[in-house]
Length: 395
Image (cartoon, rainbow, N blue to C red; front, side, top):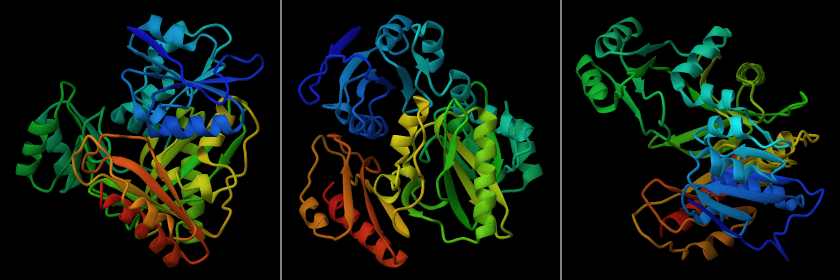
């Protein structure tokens, strides 16, 4: 199945000589915002999606097809200057062998393969000497029980693949709970078992790297989780400068270790003694970087596009002293979206609202986000949270 649906951009989507074409594997909100950054620079965009998606509509060519089919991938990539991904689950490993001459793929399939498997990701980072929670790749329940005895309870069980936003994870606080979690989550190759980390804050750092070796690092941000999902991001994190510098050092080393190109997000734990441990990596634009659209001179999405084209990278510095991003999360299940709260949210000064074009609402689903900027952290946070709540209460 290979269905091409052309969507008008301005006057036409006809290919223009000498204008780069960005191919994006995936059509969710990350692909949407990456495309918007590319279009602002006058580039052209194509999406490949396994099924129709509202987020990509109206932003370029949308190709609907089986993205595990090498022929579909090859035909999609023909005419693209570069192909990139909005998810580590995109089939870059299927595309890379059939990539047309003259088309590049960033990040590489090898990088995505390392990161998408949590066990392999941990092993590669550990072999590089980077700071991590204690972990064990366990093939059997008995191995998991032995690991938990070594680490001490509680421990966190994680599926190697497909775990995100709390899905595929289980915190076991006792041997009995460990058996329950194993029965619920274990796959043929077992589970990753991690020691519980008594962190004081969760942090994140975005690193943009180009194939030519240029690199910029965004400010260290504080992230607040709600029901295992990112709820709020504050930039910069209000932490000791020495801790921030260590977070940047660890993030930079981690991205270099996995060969990240484009934007790579590094999620971190800060411990009470100031030590930094790596939680996990994401080899693409990330929820913790949405604040950069209004908050920084160059957004994560623009720098991702610049990086995969090997163009000069833009400044990651903040435009104002503080930026706060709050996710707009669905609160009910519905096949329609209700925006009654949007006009009231727009009355709040210094707030930017981003909705992702999704029409199906589910509890906890990321429907959009709000960013506020300013000088006083409490005021900025209050404005962002108020605006997000005004919209989310009707979703």
